[in-house]
Length: 165
Image (cartoon, rainbow, N blue to C red):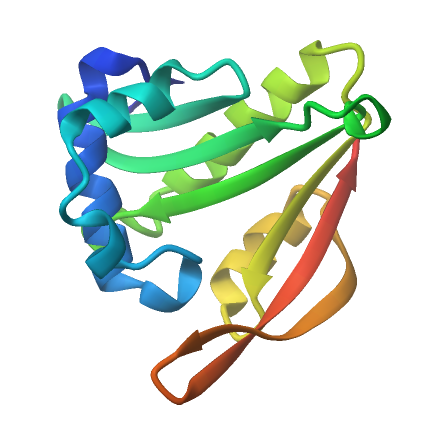
């Protein structure tokens, strides 16, 4: 397995896994498949070439099987913070350490940036495997965002976590 920062050359594979994630785990993302399915490839290229974030990808036999995005705050008063978003590992490749490898790559990158002191993330409160992963890496819960996500008539709470680097 190889973990690296994605760029615009990876946009097609990124689009594919992103849409898969939105369909497979709709409660884990604030975006929906219906919103993103018609996005042009250029939009995904733009995401991967942005200066305000880095998306890490895990490749197994040259196939993109997992992703996570590290987003940098741009406002002066918040520049000491980064956020983890859009974490997804395809179901056939879970329980292989891919999620951990992605998270470690993002955390290690954040640690190389002098101004980053804290990394934040939100995880659906009922997603025990993800919460265990984040806790094993040192993230601690600091709050619950009640009814953070609504799909049809079902609400999901978001557990808010932070890692001090």
